[in-house]
Every structure is written in structure tokens, then in C-alpha cells.
Image (cartoon, rainbow, N blue to C red; front, side, top):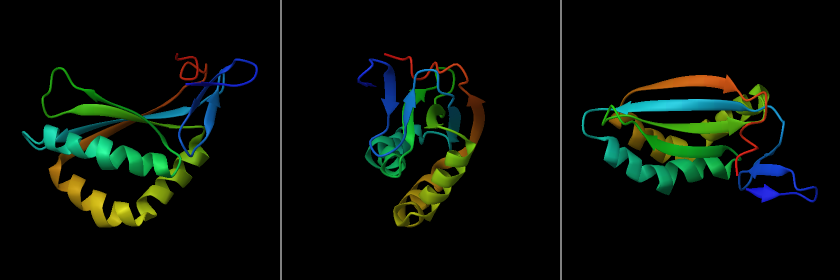
Length: 130
């Protein structure tokens, strides 16, 4: 959390956009379910490779959050200022050599499925976090 000169909350990714209080945002909740017993292995790559790859192109990443009722599932979130930015950043990520040469080949074989839900933070609740 960073504060600007007028003390309004800002949520920023290292190289991406900041979200000002009251600013709408698109939040993508991703819930991967791994093949049986592979969640821990997949999660080893998350802080080391997955999150940094997203953040390097400007995506804000939140999580992972462990599923309590399913030992093969977890959730994480990607945050975007709007739908246009989401499309552009997803394209940029999937065009990255590290995605094509490493992450896709490492992660996809461990996944059973990945559910995605998009929501809009119209009230700016994300930026009000402290």
C-alpha cells in the first residue's frame, strides 16, 4: 500500500497501474484444481515464477489462497483497471518467452481445470484495503 500526497490509498503493482480509492477495477479470480496431490508442487512455482511473470508486465496479483475443502485447489486474483487493460496484459503475458518456454509447459500438465470468475469493483473496495 502506498499513499499519495493527498493521503488517498493507492494499490500499485511494481510496474503496472495504481488503483485510486473509488476507482473501478476488474478482478479476475482464478481457481485452479490440480491433478490429485499436485497442489503443493504447483504452488512452489507460484511465488518463484508465476506471480513475478505477471507482475513484470504490470498485472497486480493477490494470493494464493488455499481451498479449505479441497486439497487440490486454491484461488488467486489478477487485478486490472479495466477490460481493455485486462485483454492487453493477458496478450502480453502469453506472448512472453518465459510463458511459452517455461510456465505453460510446467503448469498445464499439473492442472485438472481452472475456473475463472470476473467481477467489477465499482465501489473501489480494493483500493481501500490497508
